Length: 273
Image (cartoon, rainbow, N blue to C red; front, side):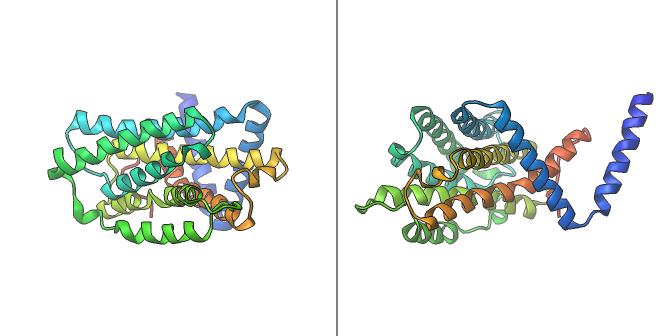
């Protein structure tokens, strides 16, 4: 009893302290903790390739969880069809230029995610369409795909000979960074978060944070040489790295509130304002 009471008092004091901190201080503390986590990973892991694969595994697991929900609960409530379609598009693009990725395991995980996503789309469009709330899924697919395609044409890995494969790869990277936006918008419109959808979005957040840490560690270890692994040109690297950062920060807020609710013995039921 004393331990629980003491824990509760510490928790209350911590929440009061965090509430009184300014936004700049919170951002600084978050960045500091992220750097500390990266340092710990750097010291504890030897093969960073497996760290990158872990990101893809978490992503695949998140999509498989969605497929389980659709078959087990017979409802697609809370899910954005637009996000699933964007996911299928960027995975198909990445698979089409798999010769530029890191290896067979990476391609296999992308294939599993792609097939699972197609299954989710099919279930939403045909088997469970009566439970799909189209009015809340009001992001337009082409509003996201067209600007990303233009950006990929303008900024992609440079080679001496023109190669459309590298444009497609850049397109997949940029599109992945914003593919979750319709799902977040859907949850804001619905003013609630369905349990399995929360699992899925949290898995995406963990996946991207792991991937971003992998990028930062590899850049540090190679003293910048990793920046040019996929082609030369500062604009390409900046665009690719910023795309990874953007996706991580889009999902970081959700993951923070999700973990906070979990530690308090609850599930996150609505999007934080």
